[in-house]
Image (cartoon, rainbow, N blue to C red; front, side):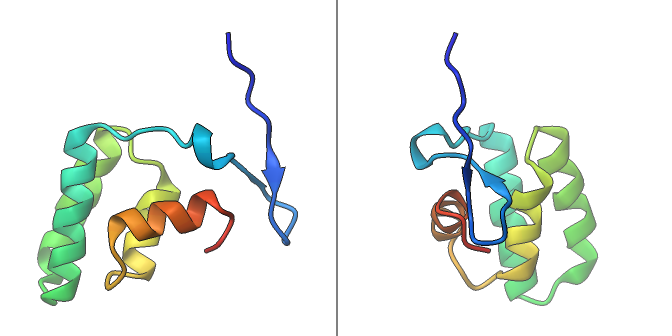
Length: 87
């Protein structure tokens, strides 16, 4: 059984080490990408559905929040920044 070592960012919040970032279910990733595109296209009526699907397939709240907060940033860049302790 692998142990998880928590690291802390400047705010003192625990964060996962970059090599321990959990992989998301492909449906969750797709929903987050669609959410990102809906936000970019200002199709806000679609967003709630994409958030619900992403969460149903295991996307953590921080992943969803990252897309909502920075829709212009790529999902891969957001996940890498989060893994390194940036918001």
